[in-house]
Image (cartoon, rainbow, N blue to C red; front, side, top):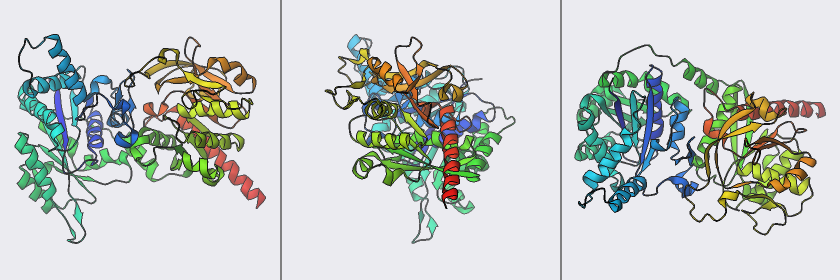
Length: 542
């Protein structure tokens, strides 16, 4: 069977959910037995998001091969079985960098290098590169139709229709159908104008996903179909939902997967969405509830901790439990102390990050969790802060710190990786991607994974300083995970604490709603146990 291509575009405004829509289409096709992969085209001129502020771009998602990518690749991996790589995210910066490199090398034989065909051909090569061993490629074009930055990508996907055949391409357009309270009705005009923009580029959408806060009435669907020149059955309500994991089920009830299969000439077969139905049922009908404090510093933008928040939710699903995530600004803990913000939570998680802002607040939160025996989970920077806290308050190493925050600290318990010294370029130079780790047994880590050999994804420059291993261990810190050669500390924990675990890696990148990451599953389990214990103590003292 020839590879099929689904191109997903968006109109009217950003943040409508193109990534979730693309991931959901992938999920629905997988439920019918098709092998899929997904690709994100980002119009920004950055080579990748690795040096971009979380406030600008949100989370940087990391793949096994060390690519720093758009956060939508996280959605793709959570909703499908696809394992993505650097080839699954292409940016304007990457495309122009490649073309200019070829021009300098003389590959174009002295010809004039132009957007068409050279830039568009490079984009098409990037799309066609991911077709190996899959039946359907879903390509999401970032940005909004009409943006000048996205025009080369839209032109490239227009050309691909002729290159690979009309029967092998499908254009899906996501647009907004807003409800206007003053008029008391849904308005289709934004969608009409958005489709008009696409038509001017030369793309006729085959399917319209209409984002709305309620179901579209039949008459409105008929009107949109007429004015946008699509089949009425192909006007799909993309209704707001209480959990993102309901999106595939909503689109399935609208008949989206049936339409896609029919339009692409794919063989129709049995479908199984039972796993997704179980996920949604657990999320909407939990039997228990816990509150987890996430002590961070990028809280103004929810997408800055996207994979982390989802992984916490997955831990709740695995324990038939609803997790309330309480964002806590680390700087507020510095100002007010930890007790004001953490006294009623059942778990404390300190995530990754960069820079000195809020560090002392994170350390104070960890100190509170350690002394009050509240379940604690430290990720990357969170683990490093746990080591700093332990060095200061248990080992008695006054002024202990990371060289990242204090280059002149008397006790650099966290220091640069040897191969990071002397690096001047920031982009793509960290320890990135999947690395093996060997766990110590017995330990909470080995119990959670039920294995001593694991692999996790990294994104950092600093490590535990080996010169301080002995003093940390002597005072009771268990170094429970190492690189295979033993040269790098990858995990730490406190044996006497109900659950106090830190990892140098980012486990959130590998968590799935149907398969919670072991560390998040056990963290939420520990939070439930703590809640039960605290409840008994409160009842006993009443």
